[in-house]
Length: 184
Image (cartoon, rainbow, N blue to C red; front, side, top):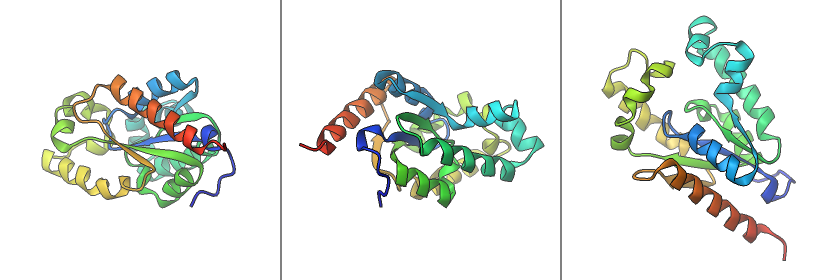
């Protein structure tokens, strides 16, 4: 499935997973350790519209946000040497999955529902998709996205790990993979 001609070592890395799993925090750490640029797709869209994601959802609508998300991810995923964090719902779009899997190394940050639930108070206000939903509805959303996240190149179980431990694990894994892909 990998049709991209750039060397494995130069491929950008895309972090996927449910909202609040730590994609941005971990992505920033990985980028720093690998001397790469970090791109948070939601932040890029917020900069373009000059408003928060929740405001974009309210004023312009989710459909317009998803279209912009697709275009921004498509652009960045074709660039080399980036660490990219995509929003929790981005991978629901087939075109986004395809472009990321074709051009990048996709790493799924997995977290159990029990662990994720402990974070809900920290993230609920900034996530428009969670607004007005009961805990049961959020759990249903959490579980419904699991199969979509199963399309990845690598998975990291983040339960019981601090963000820096996950970042170190990703960096070590990437370096090992790069060594294995180097022509001898």
